[in-house]
Image (cartoon, rainbow, N blue to C red):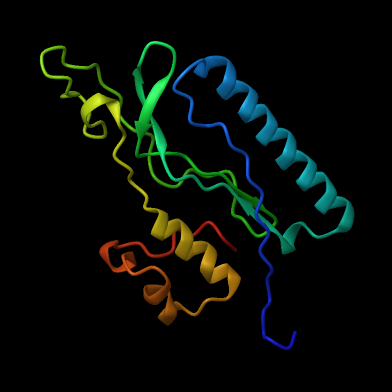
Length: 165
């Protein structure tokens, strides 16, 4: 009201995604927890008639590689994020699925893939800045202020990914 703020922000954290070991079982459990929490949120918002007023999204500081370290994977760059809510233009994928290639056994490179670096780390195609700028516009940040909030945004041709109505 008095501050001119139209939206509030709430954070929820779910740790344990640093799955160097037992990745097959631990990742499945974590994704089930995430799915349960998001389904509960959606059901609750629907009951209150507030789906169009809330946007939920995931954020992570790192991805995982596609190569095994024996019982899990190592730190990577590229990751997928979920964005959901009544104001989200859902059902689309923003960016492209990476091209996965077999490792060149001689030098640990992935010559058959333009998206994989050494050790199978994925090179992201969509930047966190683009995701954040798209959400920030929904929050009411003026287009002219986006470069201040996201200083690297100017490096990308697409500032707004278009997933918010």
